[in-house]
Image 1: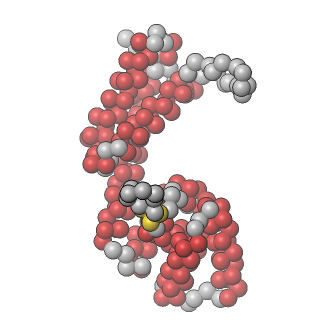
Image 2: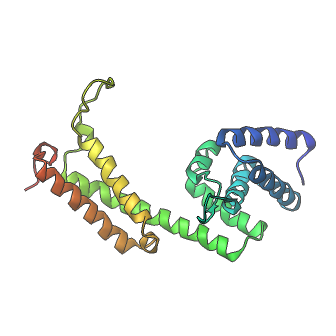
Length: 222
């Protein structure tokens, strides 16, 4: 049964607030809403309507093409990241993938788009496994971030403090994510991703030794 006018108005108000929060362009905003209305007329959408609208917005955002100056290729997508979309709708990545599978069928999305979502899901699965490997390896090599002393806010004129284990933990994982992002062919490959992680850890460890920061290395490490 399609939503009543009152319910529809309520959803529209929440949706517009979401789009303002995301600084969404008008074209993607209206396209996603129209798709949502068409699908909600033909299907029963269980759960929070805003979560289904997140699926509609994700599709609309990825269809957008932003022109560039000169002879450069246009940018595909409107630069609204999936992370921002999920944070604003309070939707977890796992919930998003579950809903997106159903949305693909209801909206009859093209095979090419479905393949991109499948690849994104595989990337997430690989990242989850790799992060579970990363933590214990890091803890075997370096001091635990939990042992770092709390830091007070730094003034503009104060010198930056030397990095601690927390900084190193964040930097190492960020390095891995950034490098892997530049090689799409291995992004959903568990073995190659694991080897890349070991390379990042080895690079960090080597620089800690060269920088004579043995205070960052775990005492029990031989």
